[in-house]
Amino acid sequence: MDIKDIKAAYRRYAPVYDVIFGPIFNQGRKHIIDSLNCQPGDRILEVGVGTGISLPLYPADVSVTGIDVSTEMLRKAERRVARTGLENVEAVLEMNGEDMDFADGSFDKVVAMYVVSVVANPTRLVEEMSRVCKPGGEIFIANHFCSSHPLVSAMEKRLAGMSSMAGFRPNVDLDEFVDASGLDVVDVRDTNLFGYWKVLRCRNEAKAEDMLHAAMAAEPVTASQG
Ligand SMILES: C[S@@+](CC[C@H](N)C(=O)[O-])C[C@H]1O[C@@H](n2cnc3c(N)ncnc32)[C@H](O)[C@@H]1O
Image (cartoon, rainbow, N blue to C red; front, side, top):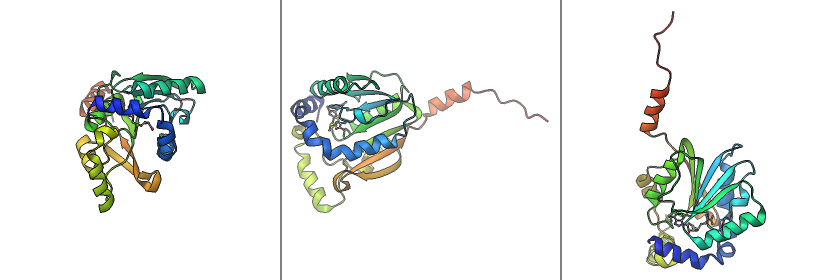
């Protein structure tokens, strides 16, 4: 799947997205937003915000930014923000989650709901999510990963051949994804219909470089007194 296929797929989905994928994915969206343990003033980034269906679920005292590559999905998000008067939404922007314009450490929490199977390069997406999240912040991902059931897994492999047209890959392997992306996963929960999707809660580890800067900025160690 490349970005052209993805944009074409979501141009087609945009008019009907909320009807088809609204209720079915809602449990996972609510689970993530409840688990964010939002603090007043937190800056939250939602990558692949789509039609902004999750935006009304965030608390009023945080600041939410949503990004997406699909113009048509974003137009719906903009209309939703205007219609529902969501003052906690700082911006919805057309931007690629694999190459974001935000400075390092811009957000306290970074969220991607049902996006990992959709992007061209999931490892690159996680790298960028980690970069724009503060060291020590949190990353939340909701996604479907390959089933361990042999019949379901065989069906997912067959469907994988239609990924470009469908706009998602049904056969992302959880262990391979976590290994390749280097995510520090602290919790995994089943969610949505038959627990067929998962919510990952991940710690955004401070990078060695950041730790070095912090150590250099810290008070010099003085000789012990006494
Ligand atoms: C399955 S929809 C999920 C929408 C929403 N998060 C939800 O909960 O329903 C996937 C979204 O990811 C967007 N997307 C795909 N690749 C992207 C990328 N590289 N950067 C940002 N958004 C992307 C698509 O345009 C689409 O709106």
